[in-house]
Image 1 (tube, rainbow, N blue to C red):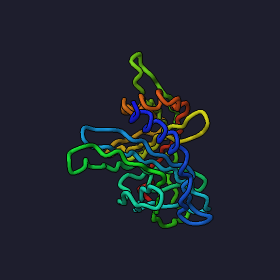
Image 2 (image 1 turned 180 degrees about the vertical axis):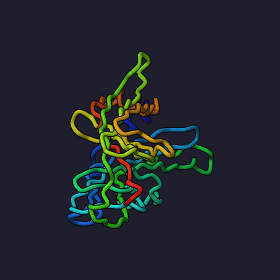
Image 3 (image 1 turned 180 degrees about the horizontal axis):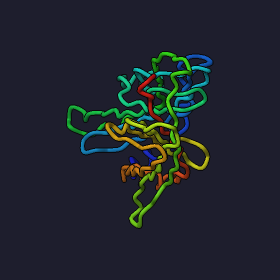
Image 4 (image 1 turned 90 degrees about the horizontal axis):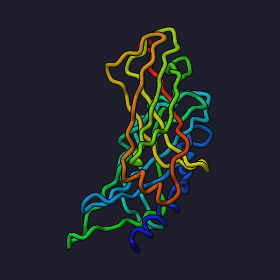
Length: 235
């Protein structure tokens, strides 16, 4: 019971706490970030998310980066960012990063609950002239709950451009009623085309353990924000 209370208090502390870690002043900034802790067998997994906003008047091309988990001044973990959606962020738009850090059991095989007080992102990127901007797709999304409490994100993506869209990238994030981001995900639709005027439907299941935690802590998702775009092969 004490462990459950501890994790609940820790998550409440972490969600929305880490709106820090600028990429570069006046260009791209980490405006919202959070962590979730989930036990998986003998391991504890820390799910980390960040929302990156492009404040510049050029395109930001996210290529690589690192992030660190801290407990006060103690460095708990440092690793490369592995998942970024999308790689190209148009001026005034957002992108998301998502990673998982695994904490191994101690020498006696007992699970070790990580105490995380901060996460610091260092995302590297280059700027691109706006003439090479991604083509934006029209999106709609909703949060769907089933009778058992499960959660899916349903996304409708429509190609309202003048060309067929291939290898589109879709990114979304979940926010609480107070505007704190608690989850982010995305995908690239490799070798999938959306014809001019065409629409596709996508379903993203959210891990049950995360949903149960949010519900039990009174921090359930009430809003989903989604973006989708594709690169013009002629750029």
